[in-house]
Image (tube, rainbow, N blue to C red; front, side, top):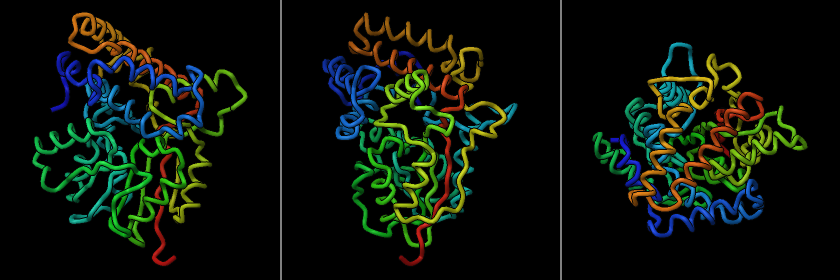
Length: 344
């Protein structure tokens, strides 16, 4: 079961970090980011430490607010957030033409929400690749709780150096995860290596769009806020991602920013002008309640010192995401499907 209450949230704060060390971990994490004067080069060279700290610090908040699938979605009018998230995952499975018995890799799988949904939807065996111990522990427990412990598994590893033989998987996908890679070409090359010839890779990427102006101070601030609140070394453009996947050797089948024709804005769950009972914890009121709850939990010692600061930089990220979405300078769903050639 996903974390549903205050004590559930408190129990996971800090992940695998010793509770006495959470505050210092927050200090170290914040120093990586441009919002606090950090440098992109430092984030890229220390990406493993930065991303692991981020997910140790943030996962419990994510699960409390989002459930088991930590991603945005193209959304129809009248469709709930949860319904849109499932459809977003099903869409990816259909684009990969997944069939029963296929061996599939989820790159950067989080706690495995999409992994479980896609495995059940397509009757495939899905391996989740993740470099964070806490998320893997949570994912394995959730797999067992729904009877997928034997057919789906997790492997702890860096997606820049995967511990799989060449040509292992029938399909590979990533959902808002490879944005953490310090080098997209290197990451895509590893995916290319472990994918069987003639098979496909599909991905939802976090990207800046052609509307982004690097000389615009507001645009730069928004980008810094998103990077801070989401553990990113840098946010690449859609053009950079597409070129990187080509440079890795893939053939592009199709690509599109799915945010462009989403009937409801992808950032709607975080928009302060919007209220929803079905996803209340993500609304402004819900986030204020969570912030104050964390403050109390930290004060009485049920949450480790530093938890409020994690809540604060996640709030800052939410503000940046909404502003970036409204200005159309950022998308969390630049989608492409690519194929590894049958012969090289």
